[in-house]
Length: 279
Image (tube, rainbow, N blue to C red; front, side, top):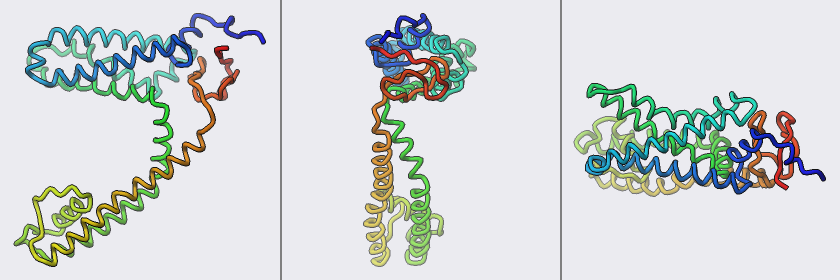
């Protein structure tokens, strides 16, 4: 069979490097971007430590500009390497990539002491770069689908927990009363929720024997309540994993930016564009 790689244009080759990870060049590109993302997050954290930032502020600024320039180049390369740039620009990853790039440039516009508060807020926007990591976690798609499928069941469960908290909170208000800190039903419900979730702040605690007995029951119920949502999501995640057990590669369509194509696919399942597979 004739290798279709000879028909690749420079844009096809660039697209293959940037959007895919099945080739050595694609893996190297992803590794560089991943390293830059992690380095940027570390810089944001270190800059928030005052004594470290005072000593290495200049170095941090230089490193941040280097990372920002790399992300800027990546952003524009992703745009020019596909036939329909809008599919990337307005996609989830496109928006995240833009938010990851612009804070450093916007900080140039905010100069002077009066803008220090705004400047700090802009710098904190860089933490959204961690969302770029989602591109490298294929299993996240199954987890998102599992959470969506679990939403109705979890909603009903949380509604039932809220009813239990209101009932038990009202009972504790009647038993303990204002003299023991349960001075209103909402505050008593707050205590019940804190106890059910096994957080236990300790700002309110029952002092009567009956109240302590009910509190013990609430604590025991809390362990069971925590396990239920976990079981629901786990069951849905298992089903999603089985549904998506078909082998997939990292092939992206250079025309519509669609992914999740079957192995050895020759054409995009969304627009019919020819795919360039490594053979």
